[in-house]
Length: 198
Length: 207
Image (cartoon, rainbow over all chains, first blue to last red; front, side):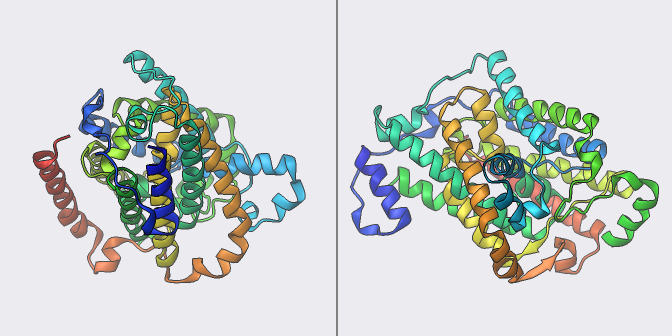
């Protein structure tokens, strides 16, 4: 089991030669789906994008919040170096609207999961565990950490994330957002197939 | 088209001005009222993401394995409703657009790197916050990674701004301009097309 993740990561990063034949990966459809209709939720998120633009003059987006908080930490540890970086000269590290949005999202999701009896409290997602084993804590931690690093770097380079480009940018007909959105899925599908279907 | 409309609005809503491209910290953004509004909108956003199932690892991996289309249904519906709503508000001069810049190389390379990260972490920046809220503890490692990755980008930003960011830079290019149609005409074609995609996915997807 571990070897399959190892192989997947190696394949992703470098060499396709090390792949190990595996039992069929976990089936995502055997686990619970959305509590509410995805069309209802999507329509309400669409309305939310109107509200944030009207009341806050801000498009819905999440990724820059992490950059701002990282900048705040950087400013505490190495203030002069952090202030010398181009990105933080253009985007001051601070608690801003979007940081509050992400903090709120953590709380809102907690309320929704509590309301629906869906609080999890697990380190290993069940589908991950089915694929990589019940003792794969270190692998899961490493994948989430490395995945987070790549995701944030990619989001900053591309100019947004699944919310900022994928929803707000796409609905405002930004060409770059549609390109980025397609690439998010292209990169994601290829990597997920290597991890779960090889 | 956008520029004239932006200029119109700057007279009616002077306090709303802020450069959308690099967003220098306009004072308003940090006012107590705006921070409280951000928190409120965030609570609604997180609540909806969790109820939509997109805070779940298997739902997000499910779309990347092309088996569970919940994510596509949520996103496409949000895009369609938001597109009609936002451009209606815009037509009445009630909102300013925040069109993201198009930079072909950065959009494509950044997008692909994002995608690889997406499959590894199993959440995205918004749904990762929601996953953490619903108790997926692995999202703690993911959030830590998101902050490290953001700082690493900042380290490289001086160089990237002078190189990759300049390749294929088209500014705030919008789809109607690119295909040479007026905005209302484009919407009149594009919105039904997106709805047709949604109907097709609803018909053929198992979930």
